[in-house]
Image (cartoon, rainbow, N blue to C red):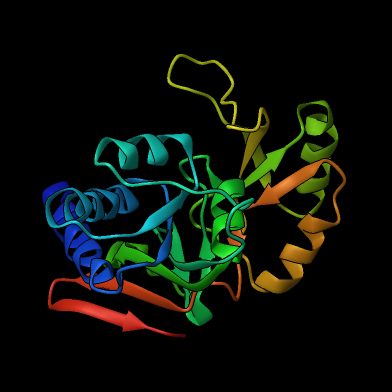
Length: 231
């Protein structure tokens, strides 16, 4: 059953509120990107600003860091700390085994870096993101601009229909690191591990949106409440 926009926002808010309960004083937290993560950052920021919660953060995007700083959240870097205690982020699709597609907002590289450094990586999403098989949402692949034609051909050989991501004004979308994104549609992914290995082997691919064996828990907001999934 389709979820209207207001209900979807309400469900995302519930998931973000549950994720906030996992934050403890003194933690280094990873701030994700996207609509659900933004709700969580705002809740976290209010707790820092209004209740004096002592944490520090590393953000997966410039937008998330700017938002966090607006609430007074202090930030650190991987030069200062190598480990994140808790990272919270959204997802575009969540499949069995907590296999994810991420990167709809174009921040997949930094998101994966932050998630990989986290002791606990928590995904927050509403029930519309749950799928039995990944791939209905186009898989983002971040690419070095010079290599885009070559990578495009390689992705077509794998069965995808890639399309260079564009901004609303028609210009090419450029990531925080100066790369392009190819959104790859037309293929349901039967074996995510094998597909990830295939993508990793393509020269010119910087990163892809398959997040496998990274999430520890998914907080899924459904009409009946929060569902906590660990597989």
